[in-house]
Length: 196
Image (cartoon, rainbow, N blue to C red; front, side, top):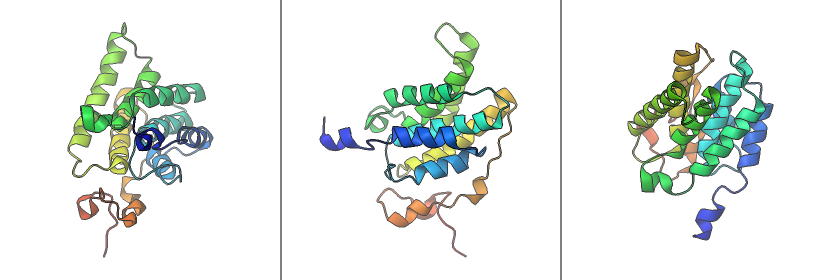
């Protein structure tokens, strides 16, 4: 394995976990933005899948409509980390952020192979997430995908659990765009800073 692939995002799991378990924020996008700003998180990478998982579950835990435990957050992050590895998004067409959303809802629902309804709901949410992200491409941006996926997760929580998290999409203005990364979509991105 290429050393750059092996070391990519090394050490991101613990800070993402620690912030997710400690925050009292109920807006999953605010949590995601906080996590994406952490110095251990690169501009692009599989760590963003952990962010999708952790931000959704931390917000649901803090909302308290559902009983989401710290152990469930950690379990979902571990599941996400096992399947979201570089460069599988390019090789298989399945973005790790989608895997992160699937792991979050799988843990909440207790989905497992013998469980029909729980597994079906998880798969529907995953399918919806990947379809929404697929309409958000060109070029790939993990940060944009996290924001899009968290929005889908917000809608799924409302639809399946009658949970209404506070979410403030209109306040998102991507400060990562000033880093001039080749994958920044600039004005094509919904989150690119607007100029008057």
